[in-house]
Image (cartoon, rainbow, N blue to C red):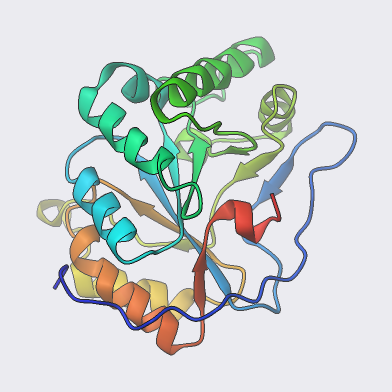
Length: 233
């Protein structure tokens, strides 16, 4: 029940996490440091869909999270623009990350093209939300390599962020995708202190799963945090 009220959140204990190397090559992260009780719920915004309902729920229940945004959506879709305005009004809750400009895989692009992709997205995201998407970048389809990491780091995105818990929530039920209970079970069975969870704002059952995710994490002694909190940024 997406209207359910989570139990009061517990305070996060966040151990120091790694920082990007000083040589500018960028840092690949799939999780934060072990030993704490922090879990980062991260949402890709690839389509508007029910995204506003998910964000409204997160705000209503004061759940800290990170949203990775596609630049073209940020710059051209009115619904996405309104959603980003809402995120920008709650910098205490949300970190905004960069998912490149057009969502294309970056593996065949030159370093200059990759840098231009994330810079264009940053411009659109900042215009819509009032917040910068630096320093967190998530490559479309998870496609990354040292050259991509160095290219995005050169324009301010020192963290290339993947995940260690994949909910598969973007896959529709008609194609064999997970139910809300499946999503909840995956998060609760696979998360530990420092985990980064992959979710999607437009997922068919993501909103339905959120109360069970947040309640279950709290009951396990795990606190939801943004990536800025997890990495001390």
